[in-house]
Length: 287
Image 1 (tube, rainbow, N blue to C red):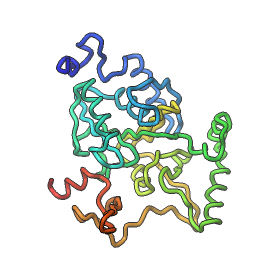
Image 2 (cartoon, one colour; image 1 turned 30 degrees about the vertical axis):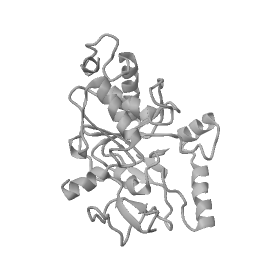
Image 3 (cartoon, rainbow, N blue to C red; image 1 turned 90 degrees about the vertical axis):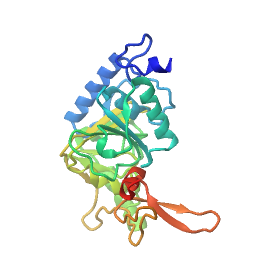
Image 4 (tube, rainbow, N blue to C red; image 1 turned 120 degrees about the vertical axis):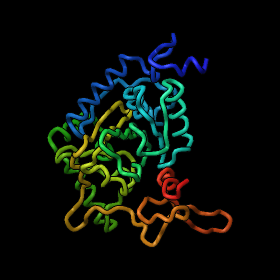
């Protein structure tokens, strides 16, 4: 049975290439085209039930499976790691249902699905980065009504968001937002870049690749096309800044220019730092 399942293009009775049926994939691709045409706009779609729990990447997975073709090469990462449980299970599902080739090398992948990180290695034209999104609406923490948030986006009324940032500065003398820092896309919509760290936010600005965001539980898809302006919200006297790793380096590859994870040894209490992007770290060391 396992050999038969790995055959492509629905050659096996009872199976469809890349798990999703053709009608579902066509609908998702149509919604992706609309999202690309209107950068930052959240396009509703008919999110399907997947063999993983909602909130664990069903939106990103549906986008990825709808785009996969026989010639694609897939890379899946979770928090920058290729071997976490989430990444391994999604990769296993894609391989089992499509026979797709996979890689850990960012440069070789045509589609990269990620949770909460953008790869350190710059993506090139033709590549697609699919981000799993738990909460696509950046205004949800300020406004519970879906109808009201739709109105605010349509009219460009983002006063509550600016007030929230100002209150943070008044109380804490800086903007206390880490992951999921709100950005303005193409001078219009305010968008949640998913819970990526601030370190990754500048990578969205005028990038060569296409960014796709899928939220399965909220049933939304949105996109940032190549060469699109993506600007983090900031004040003139309180500019946006990324996390600082000054004076620290990866203990494996020695990188001082990548996002680092802090490792605490429970026995000795010693703190060390390693690259969050494991494939980038391995490539630097020649592993």
